[in-house]
Image (tube, rainbow, N blue to C red; front, top):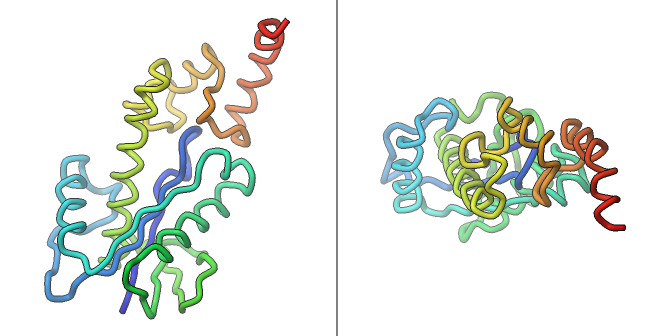
Length: 196
């Protein structure tokens, strides 16, 4: 039984990195699976519902911004994928992973560069990870409305960088990422004055 796994959110400056693992049902094929980046938000939402309804097993996991800062974004991505695979209700015999590195797992793993566009199980995982992360960033927008997380989803857009410069980082910003570290230095004197 084959599982696919993929992550979403390696590049953003804020929020968790998400991963999903999916085992598809060969008797219930899902049309339109593709790399989540090649699909519209509406297509992703529609497909995520179908995947959850028709897959033999699926699981979504994450690593927090604090965990990312503790181990680095590559290791956090691999850890999130490990959590997703180990969370599956059915144990796969083979895990196909998007990219050129595999998480530490007790079963056989294959890394496939561009797998999110080539392997349906990885495409499905890519879609679940992306839709879960986008939903989480909408929640972060409610909590920290000044940053525009609902629009850029934490990616380093001009709008986000301007907000970071103006407001300084929020607790969900990844301190180990250079633009956030620069913002912390810029805002440190202001914050220390507030403590006096």
